[in-house]
Image (cartoon, rainbow, N blue to C red; front, side, top):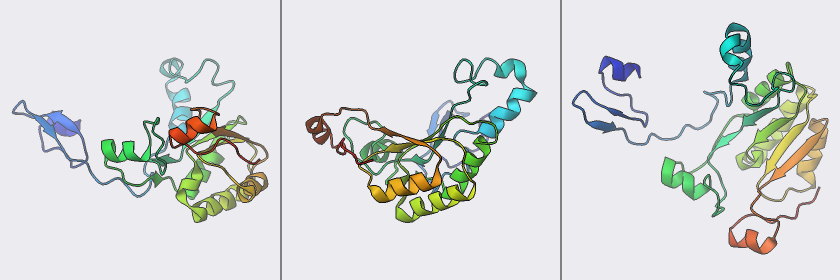
Length: 206
């Protein structure tokens, strides 16, 4: 917006805006970043600071009524997807077509655990980990759980799983979190419907 107000050249990231000549300027898509560490998703540090610095304004934009009494939280782990489910607007092909993203960009395990540690400093409610962390690969998962054990987590974690998980994954979960829940894709529990939409099997060993 500062470029628009100053009537200077727009930066190279993909935005569209009106020019001085009253024409629409559309910048091309920029390559997606390798990771998401530059931005907190969401930024709970800002939210907590704002409660004290802007109490009248902030009282109107909490995500749910009574959030301060029960501050449920979630952390976004990824933009993009490795899966091609036909019913999902965030599938691999949808991201490639609309955002020019050919592979997912993950938050690094270090940043993700840093945010989990901050959340447990003000809340004991479950933390929803949005996006299947296994999309980052086996080394990503191993580093995430290793760092998680180091902070002695006290909160329950809610994991989102896009395909079946085995004993090794659940063993790591049990070693790293005091309690956990699972969220799987919601299209249907019917195996035939899930096959038709390219979703993973609904059956999962726990």
